[in-house]
Length: 370
Image 1: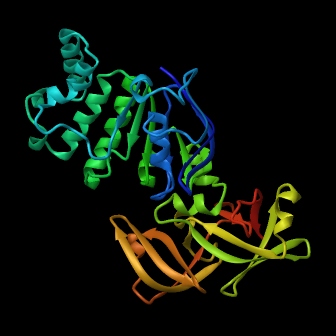
Image 2: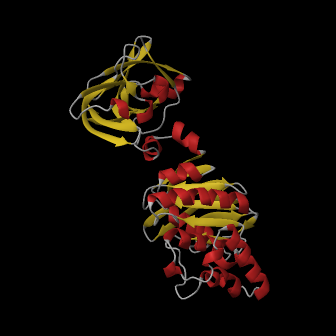
Image 3: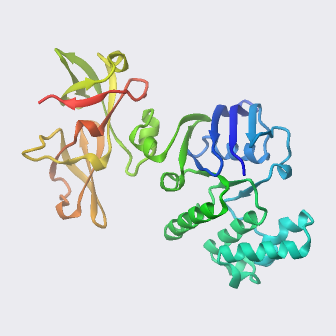
């Protein structure tokens, strides 16, 4: 088994910069997820690891081997694609055995490997069927099985679940984690789906426009995003963003929201971490789940009229405006407001994030002045 290390990896296609100075390490047996919007360079990164594209600069190590000039067939990696890439005329058994036949593995040994893998994936009853006779989830398991029989050092997944319906995607996420723990290999999984990223990854790498934004555990990325892009990209619904201006007010500060509301604050922590924000534009980020209806104990901080109320079973997401900002708050469906009804919400300062004018997270503890 092997870990992966990228050192200042860049890739250009003519004048287009797909990746810029990408550097990070993936531990042996780690399930590492690369997430970002379409066109951010995540699939290009996967193809560089597989050897299907050549790096423009930088170095890639798999284990202790520098693999920049090693062809795909000798990297001992297996790639699972979005479109399954199965051979229609071949049976499930023949599809899974195809790579072993190409490597001229003895037939008896190859057959045993296919049967053993088919049992793990519960494909035994399907071995004599052809891809056209299978469901989407079954085809995906065949594609996984074809990769698994090769016993690679690294699995590379290129959005393998995006063609499946929502229920099947959920089932296959659990299946992938179960198989990963059983195979005990390193896995790199590319997706634009934040739910997949949060539920699958031991760690997450967030990419934007070819530049790595943050590499951390799912909880660190969610609760301590390094910038406004990461904060709003992960989370459904996304984080609420309230633009404003941070001003000094005696011993404290006050945040003047663009809508006119004033939030009195204290900021604890190293002064150099936040004083550069004084008298400058800033943004306050608040996730929908930390917002709560205002009450006698929780004074209203934000208010507006309900524009949309989305019911998702036991929860309701209430959309309203504060000035020009569109905001979302999560509520119990038992307290679902009517369209046009006035609502007011509070939130703990500890659940809010402050971002400077460049979108960088400010490392400071926020508290409201009473």
